[in-house]
Image (cartoon, rainbow, N blue to C red):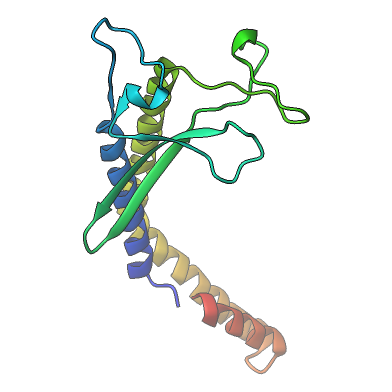
Length: 178
């Protein structure tokens, strides 16, 4: 049976997960050479994140930037951003990678990766705010929901009778959910 406490715990856990991911991404720092240029090895341009080849991908060069954190008694948290998006008409043709039958793609530059990280942080923060609003109204909305179901079951019992298969099917269905 789903209760308001279960719903609240799930919302709080998701908020904590997103806040942890925001903190991990905010901990990623862009690193440059002494002269201000980018390193030729892409992974050297970022401190606090790893650039990995995606293990199970059809493309031979499919990469992601990934952040990981282990919190004792809570477990591991991770998040990633693909850094090999699909090429579009605006993509510089010299950057496009063609592989037989697959859609052409390219590998992001360090500046593009930095922008993608900032976009990910803003999306996560927006989701956190939305979840906090849901948490605030959850009790009132859940109370209205349960009252509406109780009212509907009373009406069904009155209209169809409490010995009908319709009433018992509705009651049985709600037992697993409500």
